[in-house]
Length: 69
Image 1 (cartoon, rainbow, N blue to C red):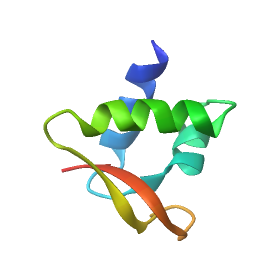
Image 2: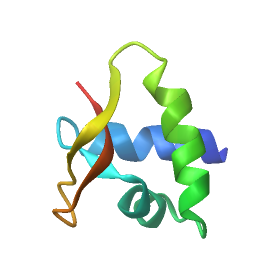
Image 3: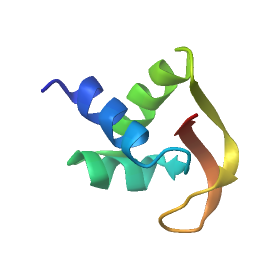
Image 4: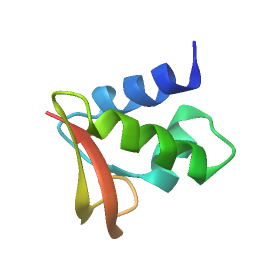
């Protein structure tokens, strides 16, 4: 499975919860938070996905988060 597809699957699996890039990277098995950031920004341009400031459902930190609704 491609990295983008893994990131998309993780975001969908926790819907409607939000994940920050760091937690998203961990859940998708990525070694770099920047990879999650890059793919999350791509996802945000797709219907049903949203990226904004908010609280991460996993770590509870307030920062940029991604979700699927």
